[in-house]
Each structure stands twice: as structure tokens, then as C-alpha cells.
Amino acid sequence: MKLSFGQEMRLAQKQMLAPRMIQSMEILQLAHQALEERIEQEIQNNETLEIDEPEVGTEPGEPVEPQQNTAEEQPLVVDQEHDNQADFERSYDWSAEYPDTDEERPRSSASRLDEASDRYLDVMANMEQRPETLSDHLHEQLTLYDLTSEQRAAADRVIYNLDANGYLQLPLEELVDAEGPDGQLADLTKALEVVQSMDPRGVGARSLRECLLLQIEGRSPDAVRLRTIVDNHLEDLAANRLPMIEKRTGYSIEEIEEARQELHRLQPKPGSLYAMSVVPTVRPDVFVEQDENGKWMVRLDEVDLPNMRISPYYRQMLMSPSTDAATRDYIKRKINSAQWLIESIEQRRSTLLKTAQAIVDHQTRFLAEGPEAIEPLKMQQIADRIGMHVTTVSRAVDDKWLQTPRGLLPLRGFFVGGTVSADGEEVAWDAVRVRLQEIIDGESKDRPFSDDDLVVQLGKRGITLARRTVTKYRKAMKIPSSRQRRDWKLAKTSGSRQSSAADEADQATEAVPAGEAAEAEPGEPLVG
Image 1: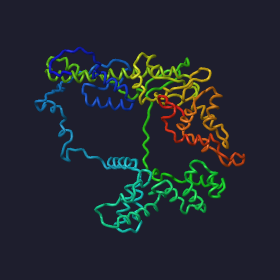
Image 2: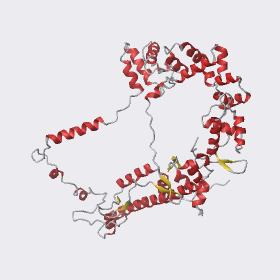
Image 3: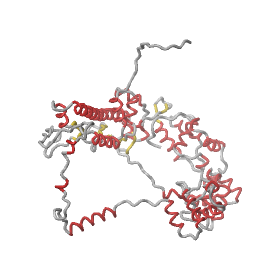
Image 4: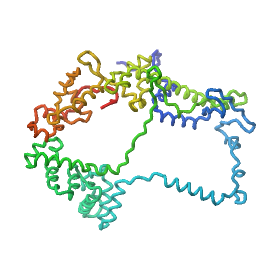
């Protein structure tokens, strides 16, 4: 291979995205609230862009005459080499409007001062109080304990190392300061006992078992039974192996079931009571309604989006022969940026309307009949229908919500995969979930259906699925295995006390990785 330096000419084709196209794709992908923020930011940063507000008494849609420049208005001088003194000449005369002397400043009456004070107090009273955190709650209780300064410092260290659920995930040995005095481990042990005695009960635990045991202490006369089950049979209880617990402890099925109900009243995550839950605000981008002919039509939510225009003042300034070259170049770049934004928003509106209408036209049965009637849909189908690229459709539905008579739903959730029924009809995965839930709701609780039985039951309804696919969707719907769904009290009366091989197989599938199951369908499920 010979290496050499030299010049050569090469002809090649490359696809490059222009800045205008990049901005258009970014605007298309923005949700409604994010678009409002983008418009507000652009209006603040671009003086040539302004909100087109109709004058009082002007009919909607009537053109607004541009305002004439007054004699006091001076052109904006954009000169990086000077101090722009001309711009500051347009500032207000603050000394004239707000005099410094008390004689010239008008005084407010006593009633006005009282009214302003009342309004200020009302605002303060209506302000949302900062919620109490777990750390605040525990430190407030810590002042009630008689501790040494070392133990109090150790308790502070324990409290600050609790996670959001109130658990201490670190061993006490890791909280010891290597450069500190001796006896820190003893102080931390004492501090942990103090924290575990605080409210809420169970805080400071290092495992679920310890958390439950801390809450059981002194709870009821059944504390011995609860402690025995939690200490030795917590995994069996979670797997619903009640006959095994009955055999090893001597407690009856009824007593074990009562103990389980008692444990359900405990708090496995005591710290979560003080966690601040942030629920994201979701507002619809598109609405769908039926017209007088029964056709489903979509419309955009554009109530809060302002109508924008290029400032007539800067248009005139750009065309004026008295404007210097530097200022004209600056205004031209700002006007181009504003024009790109306006056109990108209009293109977003058109693309979102076309995409949403095509989705609604395909899913009319879902809107009329419910989740069980949703049909399989791929993004490529919508892209072919509206004549756009599939990536454009993906950006158009990203983080967009559709307000329907059946609730507020994500646009992306309408894209679902499916399977073929016995009669050759396509069935969406969401419809399969509905059928699966109906079968499980109607099963006998003393002998629930195994996954193999669910395959058979779905086959009777014309839906042919593999067992691993049924297992995958059962787990995705957070439905326990057949053995965990079994009611052992009913099974005792009916004589079906033994778990079947299918029950054991269902329990074993709980550990099967999701990747071994069937491939997931695109989009978020609208049901399930």
C-alpha cells in the first residue's frame, strides 16, 4: 500500500439538514406547553417578533393597520463599537415620574395602607406550605431523647443516610468516620435503636423483614404469630404457599390468612409517607369530536398560542434608505429567524392535524365501542396515508395527547401491534389484554387458570398465542401466577389442596427474563 500526499477532486452526494429544517423538526416534536415556552422565549429574544393583538372594536380576522411611528420614536442603533447612547435617550425620566422628596410624592391614606396590608397577609396565608420531609420529622423527634452529643451526632448521620423509603441501606461500619474518635460504632448502634423507635414505625430498617418486625412489636395479641410468619416464612407467604406454612407452623389456613390480612395493613415503605410526589401536568394537544354527520373530526388546542407577526416598525426600518448597513443586516437576520418560527409553527399545526385525523379515521371503532375494539396500527401506515416520512409521524405524535370521549390518551398509544385470530382477522394486543383480563376475572378462585389454561381459553375466543406470550402479558398487567391467585380457604372446602404442575410452571416463569418472551409491540398500551 503506497501512501502519498497530494490534491484530488472528488464528486460526492451528501444529505445535509439546513438550520431551517432542523428548527422545523424541533418545533414539531414539542408538546403544547413546551411550545408556549418556546414562543415566549423567542418573543423576548427577538425584537422583530411581536404578538398580533386585534384592536378594541376590531372584528376577528379583520386586518390591523400598522401603527405609525411617532416623532419621539427613534430607530434602534445596533453598533457594537460604540456605547449606543442613542438607545438610552428613550428611557423614562424616572426623577420626574417618581420624585425623591416626600413633599412631591403623593401619600397613601390610612385605609389604603390597611387594604394593602390585608391583601399582603392574604397572599401569605394562601401560599403553599413546604411539605414536611422525613428528615424534618425525625429530627423534630430527636430533640425529645436524652442523648449524649456523640450519640446525637451519630443519630444525625443515620437519619441523613436513610433512603426515600426510610431504609438504611448502608452498614453501620460504613458510617464510621476513619479520623474520628473511638466508640463510634457503639454510638451508631445506639442511634439506630433510637431512630427505629421513632414514628413512623419501621423507619431505619435494613430489610423488609426488619421493617415489618418493627411494626409488629406491641401491635396485638397476634404479634407472636405474625413474628413467626415474618421471621421464617415471608417468602412462602409472598408466593402463596399457605399449605407449606400450615405444615411447618401448625397454624390453620384461616389463621395464616388472617395474619396475611394483618400484614397488609402495615407500611412496607414508611418513608414514602413523606415523599413529595410530583405528578406531571398533561394537557391535550388535539381534541376529537363527532360532527352532525357522525364523523370523528380533530381540532388543535390553540387557545393559549398567540398569533405572531413581524413588527411593522422593523419592516419599515429595514426598507428605509437611512438605515445603515450593520443595522439592516442585524434586522434582516432577526426577521428571518422570526419568519422561520412562524412558518415552523404553521407546518407543525398542519402535520399534527393530518396525523391525528389519520389515526382517528383508523381507530373509529375504538372511539365508538371501547378498548376491546382497537385495531392494529403501524406508523408506516399513517405515513403512507398522509404522504410523509415515518420519522415525521414519530415526531408528530411524540409527547402529544388526544382528548377523546373515552379519556385523555397518548397519540403514540394508538400504534399497537397485533396477532391474527383463527378466522384470519387481525387483533390488537390491547384487545388481547382485555380478553385476558375478562378470563381471569371470571375464573374459579379455588382453581385459577394456569398459563396453559389461559392459552386454551384464548383459543376458544379465536385468539391463538404461545404460552410465553401469555405469560409476558400476564406479568405486564401485574397479574400474579395461578398459584398466587389461588384462594386456599375455598380450595380447602372444595378439596383441591395440592398445587398442580401447571401452577408450579407458572411460578417458575416469574423468573424468566422479559427478553425470552415474545417481542413487544410498539407504543404504550391504552388499556391494561
